[in-house]
Length: 328
Image (cartoon, rainbow, N blue to C red):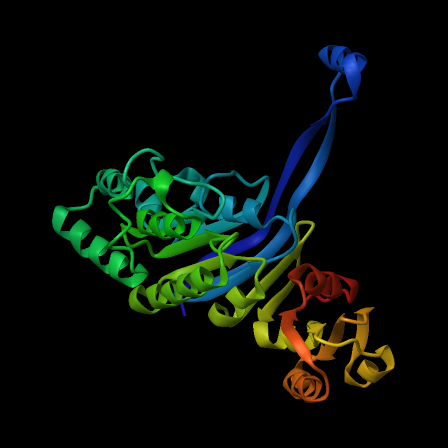
């Protein structure tokens, strides 16, 4: 199978300026500045096939966004080799740029005071799309995202979820072969998150697009990614099956409970490890394979006002991977 993306020993460092506090610190900076080298990405290696959706995960500052920027050509690597669609990204060739798209959940390319459709029209000219291709692509994306009623509104009057839909349309109007999605669901409510996941999956299936997705939400990864790459402090720690990762490093789920009547701690202990307790509320850690059975038992025994089941945070999964020295 053809390798769409190939990364070998990719490395990127940054020099960060440290200024001392106060007036003396500001004055001394005129004569001598102190810099620290931050190793953002350190000799990472991975490959991707056409049509894959790969989750790229790690805590804040792990090097995920830096890697995506090197893959999309926004940053020049300090060392190593990177090939995307047979191109060297940082050379920024027109044929390369017309086949990729980078979507950043915290950045906007839309004109704030204009309707979103105006930004789409601008992108049509940027990518030199024919009117026919543009209309076909726009109609398809609008239908897939259920965005017909919002594209003619001022961007500033759209909700966060509506703006994210329009960001995706603007970024995908030229039907790119590769999508770099950096936290596309950040800050969105669970309903919009689910709709965007559905759209990403449909887009992948319809156009056989290759997608790298960074996210702090395990729900994004569970629904979209069979494979994940884990990075921390610029070092690659895991590259493999997502299901195997969860079974090995995220064996527990957390059940948070609010009771209608006070309960005794000793009566809850048989259901799991108690990590937080008050007579009217508690939190338990439970084996993910038994979470349904445990929740049912608690509901039958106690008067429960609210029950919430949550996944282990990605940061905790990453910590466990690197603590075990995993380099599969």
